[in-house]
Image (cartoon, rainbow, N blue to C red):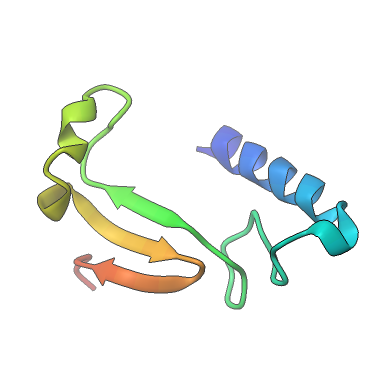
Length: 76
């Protein structure tokens, strides 16, 4: 997981360096309030079994796009 966060963070830093060409006005590559975030929380490991994404209604527990929550079935 840390390796994945590291890669996301590095790509976000590269985009930020593009200055006015950067299409994202908010922070990228981090999970914090006010930052853009695209997150899919999957019940299972799609790297081991890609078929779990076929039943996305059941297996996608959280969907966040541009920091807006579209689906959240996580128990609090």
